[in-house]
Amino acid sequence: MKNRRGSRHSLPTTQRLTIIAQDPSVRLNGRILTTEIEIPAEEILAGPCGYRVHVVDYDSTSNVLYQPASYQLLDSGSYKDPFKRSRPAKTAAQHNDALLGDPRFHSQNVYAIAMRILARFEFALGRRIPWGSQGHQLYVAPHAFADANAFYSKQDRGLFFGYFAGNNGKPVYACLSHDVVAHETTHALLDGLRGRFMEPSSPDQAAFHEGFADVVALLSVFSLKDLVTKLIDGSTGAARLVDQKFLELEALKESVLFGLADQMGAELSSIRGKALRRSVELAPGQNYAAMPEFQEPHRRGELLVAAIMNAFLTIWLKRLDRVGFIQARKRDRSLVIDEGAAVAEHLLTMAIRALDYCPPTDLAFSDYLSALLTIDREVVPDDSRFNYRETLVKSFGAYGIVPDKDAGEDGTWRRCDLDLVYSRTHFDSMLRDKEEVFRFLWENRRELDIVREGYVEVENVRPSFRVGPDGFILRETVAEYVQIMTLQVGELKEALDIDPPKDMPPWRRVQIFGGGALIFNEYGQLKYQIRNRIEDSKGQSARLKYLWESGYFDQDPDSKSHFAALHLARATD
Image (cartoon, rainbow, N blue to C red):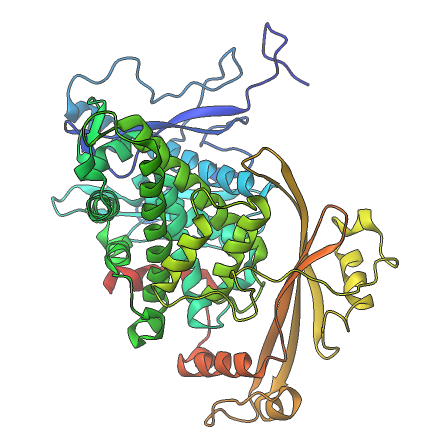
């Protein structure tokens, strides 16, 4: 192992870099609020360019390739942060101009945030996470074009951020918004974990990418303490105590969630639209999921955000009640922020880990809720202290989302209790080999109720190591299989009892999907089979109806512009 120069210690595992805490519009004493974040240490080439993120600052509108940011390697094994100042700029204007006017800082900002989100996913899942695009590196263009948009493109293997003139005529850069960069990075990671979630299926699946990316972007903010301090009561954080009036449910919702939404939308409303503000404004207690306006993907995703963020506030306040007061109706500021960060970290970890417990096709919000509850029960069996799971069930239910119909009474997936054949497969190979998992499926297809018709493929086999609050490690292997049948519309009723839309031509060929996630324990025994059956006639009929009425079969889908079009729709809504 290579050691630090002049020492017997190994190389550092983390690196700190400066970013804009939230958005250039968030300022303290007139200065853009910045913070240092910790990311995995690696060899950083000019760009910056690392083993997973490669920043290429090319502007296609002006045909300009900007000078890449470069980094000096220190004797400690870390790289010098070129934007960490030993002494602050004399004036706020100088400070702000140094950030806004230097494309190299823009490059560092996107690199550091993307690496931070990647590291958060890898921590939650206990393994390396692939991007949804081909190759090991994700290309990032911080000034890709002159337009109020930002998106992830699978075909171009990258994230693309636009710039445009703000209300005051000065340029606004999407790459300088923590929310926007985290959101787009999440799209690339979710696509790598569940590639079929981008396929058209239902209103829920169409909405999930946007809603989930918003949730990750929001929850990841609450570990940035300088920003949370400002949001709570608008102060600099110099005062040690914070008044309880700022920590009531409605006050916290107004300051933290509405404040965050307003800051994000201050100048980037043409990119993020009013979606985030609408998400946190949705009052609980209505069955939004059944309302016509929430059948649109970019509106339906707001339900996921509202449910999780309201649960976040509820649990945060519950934890504060256990902390108590320092003086009359005043709480210790650092404890308030730490408790909020702890809740956000736990919910973010749950949200990411739940992906492994979702079916690989035709996702519904009810599936995701059951996945959230199940993975948390596996890692934290005793939830009696803060009641995360109970709070999530109530919060999701307040927006018309209930656990899957096949889940148990507590909303979690039922454990597999089938009498399965293990003697014809090899335990060690099952941990990583798709062929071995397919052999397991073949030997147990009757018990697992996998129909013989159609094409069956094991798409992924991934080991996972999840660390619980008690320090113990939960070892699992997650395998995903899909079933695909291609039929003419006229054959659907006889083959699978599917009722196609009446005006759908009988000669049209359609694909029907099914599949499941197999969760094996550390001994190679099947714990869960989480699936959507290909022969589910009711679900398949609803899927075809949705695709037909949405005009999917009349389109020539261009997945390259999928997120670009969706984000434009959100902005103009």
